[in-house]
Length: 266
Image (cartoon, rainbow, N blue to C red; front, side):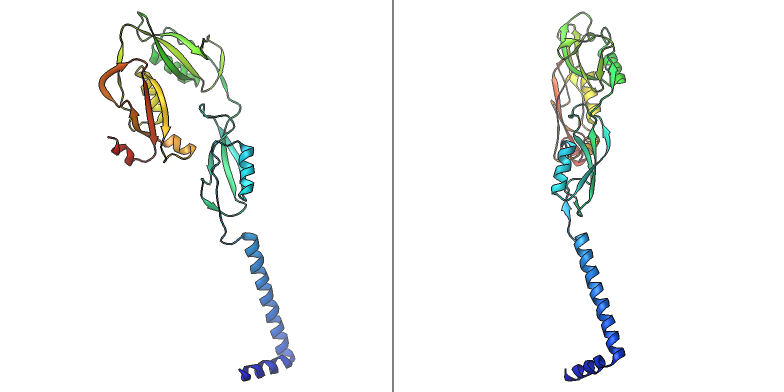
């Protein structure tokens, strides 16, 4: 230890060695300062979970993002009739993903301004034809009711908000139109097999079978708007059967994105 001390002492007393030691010390201090600065700025190793912004208004989501050291950026809009206008439908990164401070979360909201279309006349045509005409306009079949009439399976009235609606009236895309259908006697129908179908396909099959769509539920595997688009039916109530049920009966469905659940319900 004493030898090391004497060596350093002699080196320090030497002008050239002293300059080299001072230069090395300065470099070391600069390197430590840069490392500390980068650690503070980048918060090395520190991450934050992304909140779930689904169904939130944009301003509310932006305020919540600030609390989590993040920012929310609107990138696009879509329109889903059954969701409130202006709420967030999708986000990237997904909820609970760990990100660094200041990360931008890009979101898609449900459009506030919805395109309007002219109501067609679907009276005096079959339910299948009525559905096709409404689909072509971007409208939907709502609740089906049945009145006794010799014209079995023919649309007798088209209803919006409880009142008959005339041809040419402008309605937002996605509006549901209730239909009154003629029923000749105790008409009954079979429940279609909906397992494995998308929500849209399942609803179409239910309506075309002269039945009403009941509740549509999503299991725990469906967490985002994108998941709802990819989900398929894994459970229906009542199940598909050869035993006929009354026209207008309700059929409810459960949706999932986990394929193994389809086999579990077979």
